Each structure stands twice: as C-alpha cells, then as structure tokens.
Length: 112
Length: 406
Image 1 (tube, rainbow over the protein chains, first blue to last red):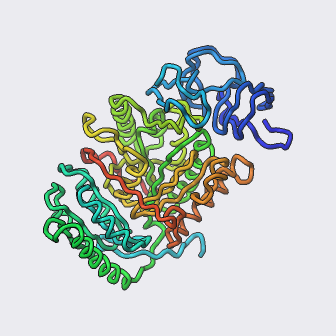
Image 2: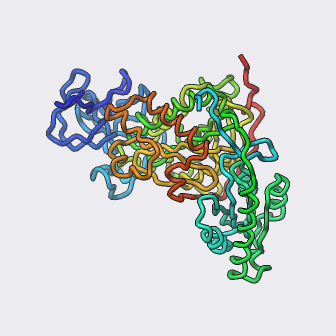
Image 3: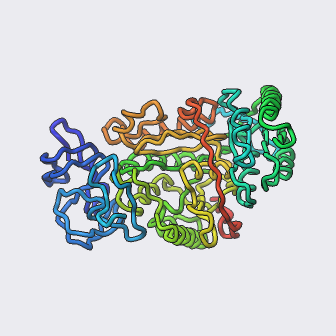
C-alpha cells in the first residue's frame, strides 16, 4: 500500500470495506499495491477519492468505515475510480456543478 | 499550566456563565439598518467589535430568540441595537432582555436619530463609551468545565472523515472526560448514522428521539430536493450523503450522547450533546441552514465559547462572538491555505502524526484560545454571521435526561 519511498498511497479504513481511499494523488498508468493486491490505476485519482477493491456488479452496496455509503449504478473493476458516475446514495441524490473544479468527470451521468 | 487544572480566566456574567471574550456587538435588526451598523463597527477596526444582525422585516419567533441568545452570550460584554424603526423585530423586548442580563445596551433608531449620517456618528459615540466600560472589567478564574465547545465541518472531502473529524472526536472525548459540554450537529449530515447514534444515547428514550430527529431531517431535505451535499464535496471525493455523514459523525468521538438540544438550548452540564438544526413542521422558509455560518450561529446560541471547524476543501470562515479554530483534513489543501488554518490534520495522511497526537494538538489549541490567544480566523478579522427564518418546537422532556452519576 505504499510507493517506492514507502509512503502510504491507498488506505483501507475497515476490513469489511470494498473500496480503498487515496491518500495522495495517483497518476493514470501507475500501479499501486494495497492490502496485498496490485491495482492498475487507469485514470487520475485525487486525494480522498475511492477506488474499487475488487470487481463488483451493479447494485452492490459499497462499504466505507465498514458502513454502507450507497449502491453501484453500474459494474466496476478492481482499481477503478468509484464516484458519482457509478455510485449513488440509498437516501438522497447528490448534486454537483456542471463543471467541477476537481476531477473533470465528476458529473453524475443522470444530470443531478 | 498543568493539564489537569488549566488556568483559564473569563468575564463573569449575571447568569453565572463566563465569557472567554468581551466583545461589543453592533446588531442590526433589519437589513435596512445593516449599512449604518457596518459603518459603526468598521470605524473601530477592532477584533472585539462585532457586527451581527437579522435581515428580515417580518416577525419570526426563532429569530427573536436567537438574537436574545447571541446578545446575551457569555462572550458578549455590551450591545448596540440598530433599528430602522418600522421593522417587526421586538426591539424593546430585546433591549430589555440584554439590560436584564446586566450588560450595557443602547438602542439606536435611525428614523428617530436623523438618518444615516447622524446615526453613524451617534452609534460610534455609544460604542466608544461601551468599550471604555468593558476595559475596566476584570476577568475572574474560570474552570475548564465551564467551557462549551462546538464542532462543525465545512467544505468536507474524502480526507475529512479520516483525519480532521476523528481527531476532533479524540479531542471531544478528552473534553467530555473533563466535564466540558461539547456540541456536534447537523442532523441532515448524519443521515445514515441514526442507529449508531441511538446506541450511544444515555438511555433508550433519548436514542429513539435521536432516530426520529434524523428521520425528520431526511424528510425535510427530501422535500427541499437536495441533501446537505455541495459540489465541492464531490470534487473532494465524497460521492453520497451517507458517505459524508459517516465522515462527519466521527467528530462526535466515542462518549455517550447525553442529550438532544435545539438552537438556543444551553447544555445543562458537561457531556456530549447533539444539536438538532432542522426546523420542525412542514418545510416553510427554505433550507435548514443556508451555509456553514448559520450552523455556527446556532451553536453560539447554545452557549458555545468556541467552535472547532474541520475542512478538507479549505474553508476560510470565522465567526462573530465565538472564535472558530480551523482544522485542515487534507495535506494538499493545507499546503495551499496554511495561513488560514490552526491545525494541520493532514499530517496523519503523510505519516507525520497519529490521530491521537493531532487530537492532543486540538485540545491544546482549545485551551490556548479559551485562554485568550486569537484563533487564526479571529486574528484575520473573520466575523461572519448569518441568521435566517426558521421555526422550532421546544424540546421534549426526554431530550435532556438527568445524567447517571457513577
């Protein structure tokens, strides 16, 4: 879970979690080891964002801190970015600006 | 100072509470009196002269109660009320309430004082006199347990729930152990955490009330069409309301929850309290709190002497009346906004500090600011204040159970 300099890159917050949280910005095309697994990072991941810990089908409940934080709206592969485009609330829909200042693709696909 | 007996000093008020500041408040009672009030307060360019107010012309019981609560907050030493003259805020009752608390209070009615220029000049002279009166007031010894501390998060991101929020939780645990009253809030940002919170309540009745209170928040936000989730939260890696909730929840630490209060209710003793900020009844006046500062104002109305504000994206706000301490969750944000932050909790992610160490840093910062040191936002002159229309029913008898003394 750390890079060559030994710094932590991905954090598992709870053993039951199926996502990992990035502790530092990760570039596309890099490989990151976490919890004994090597992940291919295919898109830039900013600090605080999540990647899938394993391959999961649509409808899967995502767990962080060991607690459910929503359900997948589409299937994801291990190492893939998990955010507005593939995860939705089981309570109230989230909303974003049309053009966010962080990651460019943070818009929810259904326009919310 | 020894950690067990911090040597705090406070300004004694007639209700027995003590203030860690002795500010003069200039309060406009309608937006039409805002400009005159701002000119009066900005004339002094003083960290201890604060501008607050309520913009509305229509009557609102909540707004009146909030104005009474903040004008008689222990950090407030004297009050100048500025009225246009025709608004509906009950200025005489407000003035009487402040006077009954033993504080110097003056009322300036612009329509009766000859308009803008004359009112500004008159107001400056009145505030000048109040500052002279307050300068003569001597602080008295104050115990740590006389302090009330609030916490809020703003501009949260994916790091908030890993670093700054749980670190504040550690600090809260330490404060509650020392019999300090600690307040956490935003039931709309705790949607998804209701059952865990209920288990922490000091008795099952309070647990049930907490669950009902979060259900009310969910209903309210559903009607409004949005959860308490801003675009910046998504930019920072948070995807859903319940994910944000789980992160926010960790600010509360691990102490038992002693009570459920509403804006203006002062915790009766030390312990951990949940502040319900979502209005009762059908949604009427819009979003429960239109921005972070509205929540800070409600915590101040509950007697909070200072507020611990965690941020991942990088909020810069402070507050009138009670100092805000800024705890930055994200190490990259800290690099950009270090001049606005009191504590760098991002050190937890870079491996430079543990959660406990940052929790201790926050605890020491609380003691320092309570002891008179300026927080960063306070020293920068941040004095944000927002008060809008709301409606609340009084809390029920189960909300403040008598604590079991072991």
